[in-house]
Length: 328
Image (cartoon, rainbow, N blue to C red; front, side):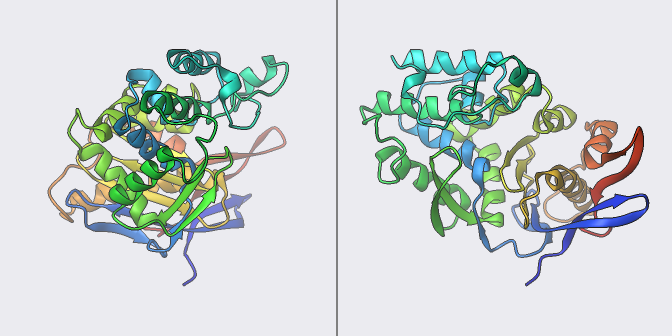
């Protein structure tokens, strides 16, 4: 099956590029309310798996809360407060940045990148997760030197959580950009896992991760990142992106969704996610699934700004990146 066009790039009134992909939205009762494309095909969720990794860490003995737990479950921008948070996680376990096995990288945040003399492991967007993985190993008395080995007890625990929350077996195992094991499940499985996060008891590992991320969105991404802006715009929304065009989200009432862009274009991710959120809201209002409101407290203007990215041409606007008409 060829996936449908989800995003169009229009310049001067002419559609010059198209991004295909798969997306699914779950109603309050967990049934599929909105879908496009092959949502049962396995994908690598990339960093959208991080909240699930954090759940496994908490279940294995990690003791983090608040913004530091959000940092462990996020892909930070390498801002100074993120670095300080990573250092706190490491210091709490008697470790330093030298123990991190993620690659060196420049910060995602442009301002922070301009002030850095050189790339470093601690500025890499996955260093919060890696620091938490190391702290988990210390808490569980597991070896730290091999924490990225797929056969390490920590990574086996992560795989178990991914399969449990996604409701399906892992289809493939790979290596993420940060060096950690990567577990493939379907786009539908990703949506199911985020639904499980928000519906868990507040004191369960899943609930603790979801609440930390929603309370501290700037720690899961960055001061200016799209995920932070989305969570600010929609109260109760949990959202996390992944490389190669992946987004996953859930609302407090159990509605959830996931997006995978076929060509991996990150520019297509947020417009589709906003369109999917609005399609779920419309579906709920029309009675699909269990009763629920639309997005009554959402900032419509902020969502409009995230749904369409403007393209420049010379000194003015020349076009837009927007959801394809009739995508959902």
